[in-house]
Length: 367
Image (cartoon, rainbow, N blue to C red; front, side, top):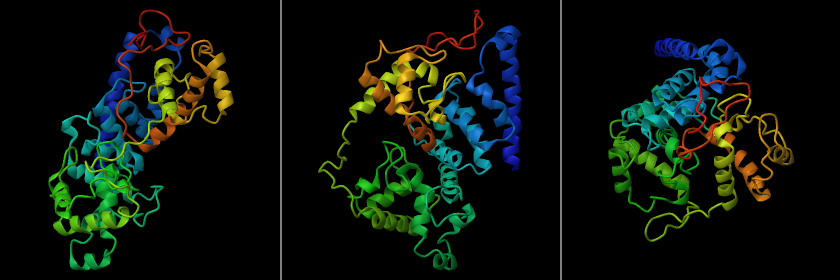
C-alpha cells in the first residue's frame, strides 16, 4: 500500500472508530442485538481490513446515500483506497468525480489533472474487461506517448487511441456511447459536424462540464485524438438533425413503469439504487436474489417473503412484470459506475426492521 493510501486508510479507521463510538453511545446493547445489521455494518470491517471491492462498494453507497447518509467526502476517500489498490471501477469513478461528470458533484472536487490520471489508469488497468492494447500501460508511458521523436515513432498509430481511452472514454464512452447525458456520443455522430478547429478549441479550453485539457495535452496530441475519433466513430454515425441535437431514443414505457413502481413500493427497503439499508432485504445491485427466475421473483412480490409484505392487492400484474425487469437493471447500473443522477423521491417510507423497538432507532420511520 502506498504512503498516500496508508494515510487515507488510517484516517478512515480513525473516523470509523469515532463514528462507531457515537452510534454505540446512542443505542443500548439490547436494542443493538435485537435488530439485524445494516449493510454498512456488515461490510465496514472488510473495507477497513483493506478489501478494495468492498471499499469501492462503500464509496458507491456514500455517493448515492444508499444504506448511509450521502457524503461525497467519504465516497471520495473510499474510492481512493480502492483505486490505489488497482480497482478499475474505483479508478474510473474517481475520474468521474474529478471531472465532475455528474452535475451534483461539488465544485471543490473538480481537478482535470486528477481526472486524467484516474481515467488513464482505469483504461490501462489489466483488469479492465474491455479488449485493449493498453493492458499494463503505465501513466508515465501515457504522458510520454508522442511527447518526443522516439516515443512518437514507438506509439505511432496508437497515441490517439491511448489519449482517447485515457482522457475521453470515461465520459464519452469506450465505444463512443456517452456515460452520462451531457457528454456527446461520438458513435451517434454528436458534435462531429463541427470543424476540427472548433473541436480542438473545446478540448483545449473545456466546454460546459468538460474540463480544459490544454495543460495536459499538446496541440499535436489533440490532433491525434481528433483523428482517432473521426476515424473510429464517423462511419455508421447517425445523421444529425439540422439543429445538431440527436434524435431522442424512444421511451421504454415498461422500464419506466418498473422504475416508478420500484420507487413507490421497494426502494425504502431495497435501496433506490439497489443497495438495501438492512441485510435482511436483498441488495439487487449486488445481484442478491437475481439468480431466481422471473416467476419466483413474482411469487415473492405477490405473496411476500420473510419480513416483506405481500403486494398482490396493491401492485397490478403488469406492474410486477415491469418491476422485475427494472430490478434486473440495478446490478448493471452499479457495475457501470457513478454515471447516473441521484434516484430518490422527495418522500419515502423506510420500514423498521423486525425485532427493533423503542424510540432510539438508528433509522428514520418516514423520510
